[in-house]
Image 1 (cartoon, one colour):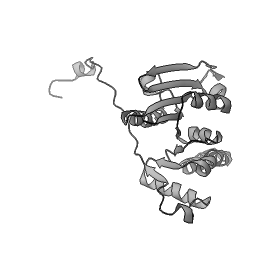
Image 2 (spheres, one colour; image 1 turned 30 degrees about the vertical axis):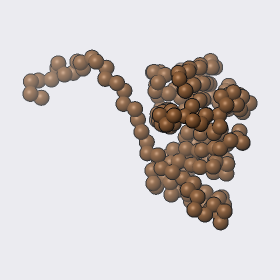
Image 3 (tube, one colour; image 1 turned 90 degrees about the vertical axis):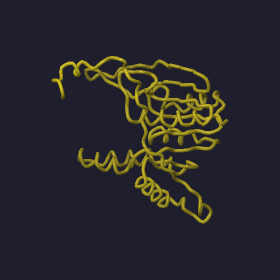
Image 4 (tube, one colour; image 1 turned 120 degrees about the vertical axis):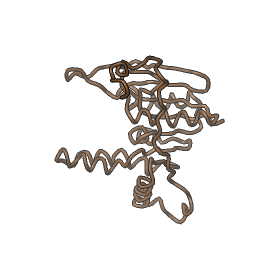
Length: 219
C-alpha cells in the first residue's frame, strides 16, 4: 500500500452536490481506481469559484470527510488551493509518498509545490489546443499565455504523465520533446500513459419515471 495525495477538482460525485464538472469526475475516477488497488488516498479538491447575480460566492469552509483508506479535503480555490503553505501542510500531514495532479490546473498547483516525492501529472485533455480555440473565440492571446503558464511547470517537474487518449498522448510527448525531456538519459522511459475517460453510473433511483405512464400503449 502506498499513501497517495491527489490534487483535483471538486465537488466529487460522492459529495452529492447540486453541480459537478467533467474534471470532478476525472478526479474521482483516478482516486477510486487507486483505492481499489489497495492504496491509501487523500484527495484535496477545490470547489471552483461560483457567482450569483454577478457577485462572487465566498465559501471558505474547509470540509473534511473520511472513510476507510479514503480522506477528502474539500477546499475553497483562492483561500486554500492557491495557498502553497496550506497544500504542503495537508500533504505532509497525510504522510503521502506520492502526489497526483488530476487535470492541468491541479497538476500545475502540484508542480508549484516542488514536491520531493514522486509526482504524476494527469494532463486530461489537450490544454494548448483548447486555449488556442478560446483565444480565437475571444479575439486575444491571453488564454494562450495562461495555458502555457499552467502547463509548463508540469512538463518540467512531473515524473510521469497520463492523458485521456492516444492523440493527446502524442501531443504531450511532442511538448516534452520541445522542452528537452526526450534525452539519451530518458530513452526507453514511458513518460505518458493513456487512461481513457470514465464515469461511475449513478444507482437506479427506484422511482418509476412518470413519462412512462404518459406513453401510448405499444410505444
